Each structure stands twice: as structure tokens, then as C-alpha cells.
Length: 259
Image 1 (cartoon, rainbow, N blue to C red):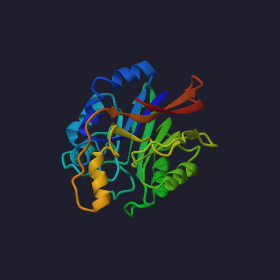
Image 2: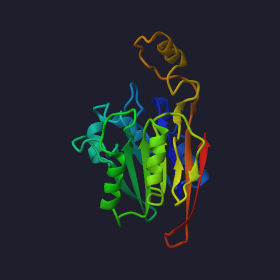
Image 3: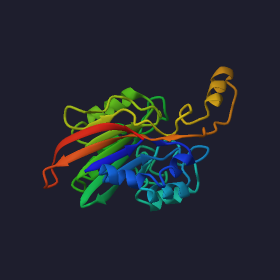
């Protein structure tokens, strides 16, 4: 089972760029399942419902979210009706959507979870407890488990991953838009990377026009953050879960990809 995890989708151009590319990339690389963080894929941050549907049509199996996932009103009903889009599970239960989903992939049940960090971010339910409750509630209902930690602090992401090492098959971080070089298999067998990076304009600062960010930092004045133009670059990882033919995972690998 090969899983492609893509980092934060930034700008409508990053979505459109997958239209004629992702399905062929899946075929050429033997990818069975794709997870992508989509919370910044539409203008002004957030994710419009039509952009979410495009991502699913273009080859993404599950869209994960973060602190901007509710920013577009059009997505909120979609979050409640579509099992292919999830949001951080440690936000209040009254928020639209679910923090996890279980999908079938060629007879394998894949649990995908989403949680938000709380260090340098909003004060939310403890992410450790939220994930633990989900794993307990879904015990016996899945074969493979994946967690997207949408968080600012690298230490928090790593701590969550180490706590669930051996209990979750693949854990990856999103939110900072910068890919880290620490992809690894943790001691008890969890595939991990602190941040997948960004899928968006290459010539930018975190997807935004560089001159705007520089002016903001130099002057401290309020400015509109417009997405940069030009070539789109996709960052993520491929996690390969090798089985014994009876569904039991006997080996894992993780590698960074950029295309």
C-alpha cells in the first residue's frame, strides 16, 4: 500500500495544477491512496466547496484541514455530508464536520485523522486526548491509520508522534508550509515527518507574493496577502506499507517527494 501525503494546498492554482497531473502521477508511482491538506486552497484562505470537489475529482482521496477550514461558508454543509473531507477533531463538537474518516481502498480500511496543535495556536481540547479517544472508539474498524497534525510548533508535532509511535501507521505535520528533512520510521514503527511543506507558488514566501510579506515585516502595516503567481511546486511524502499478503504490515518506508 503506497500512500501519498501532500502538504498545505495554497492558492487555486495549486488545485488546478493537479487536474492533468495527479492521476498520472499516481499511476506512474503506484500510489494507492492520496491525502492532502486543503485548508488554504481558495482565495483569502479557507476552502470553497467547489475547490474541495475539484481536489477529489483530480485524485485526492481525503482532504484534511486546519484552523482555516471553516473560513468559507460554502464548505460547511459539505463538511457534514462528505466523508472525504475532515477537520481537526479537537475543535468543539458543534463545529461542522468530523475529525476522522474511514475509507475503503482495495479492500483495506484506512482511518484518517486530523488534529490541531495548541502551542502558539488556539486553546483547544488536548490533541493527545482527542486522538486517543478516536483510536479507542474506532478500534477494530480499520486496518491502517494516518494522522495529520496541523500545528505551529515542531516540538508539539514530534511529541504527539512519539506518544502514538506504534499505535498509528503514519503521522505527518502540516501548517508551517516549509518541508522538514526529518522523515523517519520511529522506534516502534510509525512513519513520520514534522512538516510536509507546501503545494503552491514556488517563487513566493509561504505562497504569498514576496514583496507583500517583506513590506509587512518592514512596516508593520496591514496588507492584503495575495497569492503569488508562477510555477506551482508540490511537496509531500510517499509512505510505503509493505504487507505479508494477509494484510499484516511487515515493513515501512517513507521518502520526501517534490514535483
